[in-house]
Image (cartoon, rainbow, N blue to C red; front, side, top):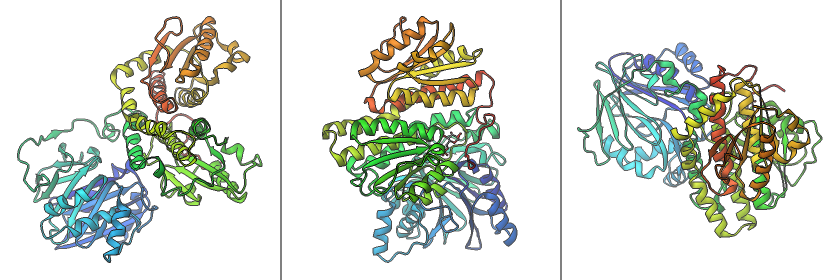
Length: 607
Ligand code: G6P
């Protein structure tokens, strides 16, 4: 996820682009850059770091003059954050900015290199610039149309051709882009806030529709080069700037909850295209040397590890030990040569997780990082990295990064099971095809019908101070994550218990009216947990049942969230999304600062 802006008009482009980018920094801030055209020349300024670093560079050197330009704020996916990997990128006659991922970039680069092409960055974007340049014969629309079928993945591009520096071209697929019309000027942007200071009138760009911005006017073309004259609707943005940055959602957390069907879809399609045997092949080429697995993380990342343990142990029969990083680092862990340690971290900067990584290295183990932020310390120091690629997460309480981490654990399960032949080919085929449907199920539990239930049930919690969640096996681990969500944002005291353990102490805390939740997604042990739910209700506990495998039954629960069903080993992803959303509404109704809960930080870089 990156932010792009383009301007074509009569004013100084650099200033307008910088202002636009400042509204898109939430989309990433690993590096920033602009390209501005004057008298047939395109000047590029770019640097690693936040937009303020680019501003300093411009202040020092003088901002480039010109009324046409493009800009970019980067959230690194391919290639560490560096000056070299910053956008805009150029190849031949093409300069461009890109938001998205070109999945076949390695293949494109390698085949270009055999023809003598030379690349200066590690990015997928530069390969796209090469392809467009190689298709260019003086007609930009034709070149873009010819290049797009060669680019697999997602993109929003802003493009300048060196012999047409009075014009910006833009095109998108699966990455957002608008084209906005001002008075004698026009813009492209990844998101509306970037242009709101100049105009509120914009077009949504459709997939593979090419926009041409010239002389203050926007024209659209299809891939056959025909101008689209009908059907483009000029829309009017009437919301305020702050709301627009959150995509119209009241909080980043809710926006990120709703992004999950897309983040899951992207990860699944990226890794499963060629079947289980190729999952992570480029990140972990060989799993045959994995004997014992250790998973280490903090907070939600550790919970993702607990879910991974469950599926790996069940389906691959490898022992998995899960540790809290702050414990692992002082525990003289029995890890050593031949062991593989997976360090899970959204930020890649958590101090305890980084220390656990270094300790694992000292003890001779191999370390594989599962990280969201590209080029972060943990990603840099690990032997191998698998990225969760779900875009910047702004809300302190993690949602989309957590489900992406769990998904990586499930992909890893498939790969290990494939390599070890611990499940049948048919099971694996069904597992992957059920996985491909997970985004649909994630979207289903976010439909209005469900959300109304979450809101209604959350209202019950308002006057209460304590909350208990029970589940068995993987449902217990999902409960741990659910309890974390509830306590960190709604400030209710909330604990998750293994359902059978409740009677060994905690049930004494269940008094009439105390809100509880039971999670049941494993049909094989559903009845056991149902018995525990009955024990809770017999003491007056008020139970919300989140289940895919029990019927709605007034004897069992007070409130019921019926989950759509899939392979039981994938169910935690379906189950946690309702709990996240329910926790969100609980916090909203209790008047809490959802995105910035008290005493907490997004990235904990101290011990
Ligand atoms: C903080 C965040 C949690 C996160 C944990 C680990 O406590 O609030 O949401 O799970 O750190 O962070 P990491 O970046 O390592 O995943």
